[in-house]
Length: 349
Ligand SMILES: NC(=O)c1ccc[n+]([C@@H]2O[C@H](COP(=O)([O-])OP(=O)(O)OC[C@H]3O[C@@H](n4cnc5c(N)ncnc54)[C@H](O)[C@@H]3O)[C@@H](O)[C@H]2O)c1
Ligand SMILES: CC(C)[C@H](C(=O)O)[C@@H](O)C(=O)O
Ligand SMILES: [Mg+2]
Image (cartoon, rainbow, N blue to C red):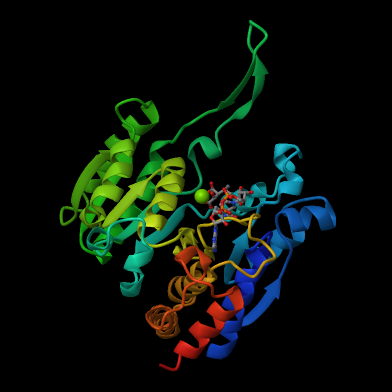
């Protein structure tokens, strides 16, 4: 089983190193790693954020473990050369349309949540975010109006096949969890969202066992903070899912805690923390590697069909936190390396 390692920029290499150290410690038979540059690192080395050789490795591999991309040195580049295009390109080229972002509170992290402990305790939500459409991939550009003003535009669109596909992922995910699906849109304003809601309702006919509800995205953001325990599975579009998952991460303690899986129709996946390259703390050994370590666990479970080591990793993270592990984002002082050590030590407990 070949794992493509794409560490990327900023804290990406720091957090990937800890996930790889943990996977090495587990000694899983037949796991092989191959690394390739991506993002700003790839641009600086070869003039493109997603070189053909990196895309080729991603396609050959059984799964991809991704760090983060984004480099302030590249801010002035034309859009198609910016580091972020690499992750968007991978998601599109590999047809990774279903992004699963679980937010749940580890029992010992209530003190780190942005919510009061008695509210935070209840959060256990899976955000199913569509990843191949929306404003991210619609026509976009810069033009000049008749009045001579510069005008930027990004077309938001979804066709019914795209909505149906992610809706089915949402229903299936809810079925494997607590049987409740909340579809989040902005159907009071957006045509895209009206179609989204219509299609989700049509697909729901195939899932009579699932309790379906709908929320506008502004209300959903408020409800996630007010009473996150009401949510089981959320299905939503690319942009709303991006924003809601960062919000949900703080309910669960920190953005440094949330992993993700981005899956194609066959279950091949790219696994990455939901956070970015965090230039403000890069190179200082301060990054929390747990989101990436938990992404590695998702990779073992979803793409490699290895639930036992996935369970072991998640239990080790939980035990390490129970033992007092806290990186800076969680209010502590542990370094990235010390956090990796604590999880490895907890594997035996
Ligand atoms: N999938 C990705 O590769 C991805 C995701 C999000 C942002 N980005 C990119 O990353 C760059 C920085 O973006 P941003 O600052 O808006 O978001 P960010 O997620 O990188 O950082 C936001 C804040 O959270 C902190 N943080 C993030 N991850 C952390 C961790 N593991 N441990 C401790 N603290 C952590 C950072 O220090 C920062 O203060 C941008 O170029 C952005 O486009 C990439
Ligand atoms: C870097 C950016 C393109 C990306 C997104 O918006 O999807 C990031 O915010 C994420 O959440 O993975
Ligand atoms: Mg994001």
